[in-house]
Image 1 (cartoon, rainbow, N blue to C red):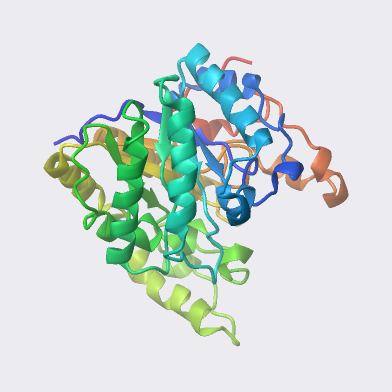
Image 2: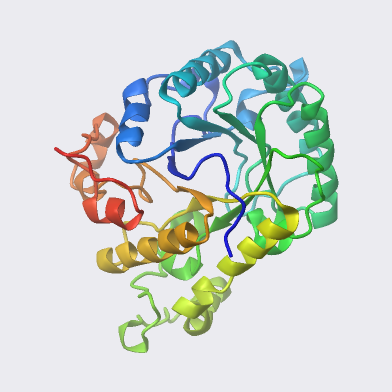
Length: 355
């Protein structure tokens, strides 16, 4: 059994561009048209662009989208149409440890998507709207009401474009199953996949896992590091639960359920994020993890965008930037295709461009 087809198949996230920064701080040319042309050479047909509208838009002026952001969005729309490349405008909210989604988010969501819906209503069909990334810390039923109202509001202004919806609890599958029926033939249901989290996020400071490192995948007792003597409850939980969570069977158990959900809803499902932190994971095990996930999604006809591109979860050889002195990394420029991590590119089912 296969999932209902999305309009796109596979691609990447262009991160660290329009996230967590005010408009004034954004480098408009961090990603250029050449970057979008390059992903086509990789065999991608979609790019997801996380955007931190909560930083760009202020309630004081009715959450108006700033002119600089409109300039970038318009440029992206023209590239999408010219290159025949799907672009996902992702309302990407704060997701660090300790954050939570407030019910008040409905105000900015309604305002932002109204503006985008009006502005792009008759523009390129290659644009896709993702209403909000990873809502969390909010009651599932409250979130389901919010996303339905925001969706219905957007559809007053734009009936043309596909819209991506995701459940609460960090776009979990269990929350996705509770989402309302949108009664629309251009809805795509979204989930994210980082299992097992102890492996994919080992060493990450934003997850308080700096000392959870050396984690093998699949779980192998002989390769496991010792639990720190002064481990926090969170660190101890990560180590002690890993024997059960760090198996291939556990990792794969949900994929068929995504297909069943897609068929039941008669709508595509889409994995908007999946990835593994490059700095601490064993390189071979990381490649194997990417191949397992990409193959599982491909076999089930589930569209996907890996997290990320240039970053530490990305498809470039991150060792190259780690070898650069920290004070010089801001000026580091990746070379395409020379700096690609060829094994990761292959594992993702992408094309390795000819040098």
